[in-house]
Image (tube, rainbow, N blue to C red):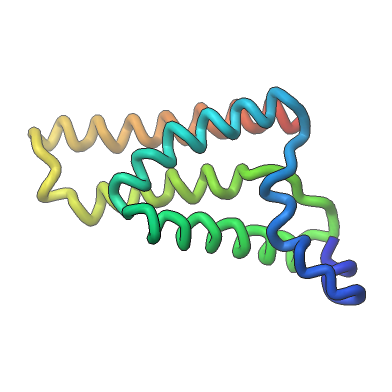
Length: 128
């Protein structure tokens, strides 16, 4: 709640919503996706930059949410979307270094898009 951050100084509300979940199913899906996508991102960034990236998404998404909407925010869904954005960025940066033909590279992008669609469907089903 943004007014609690502004009036009472409860700045912990910028980090806590990312570790709370709507229920057991939401928790399981978020953990599975964070592990599967996070290992790929961490192998590219390294552990220290991964921590900085993770905390930046965690803080930034809750800060943005507290400014934009007056409702509660729960879940680590922005972190998962941040991982997918990082995968897109890595594909674009290392496009020339990715082995294989152009068809293989385009299929890789298509797979990342499909993961984004599946993640969105899973998260929207567990959040409602």
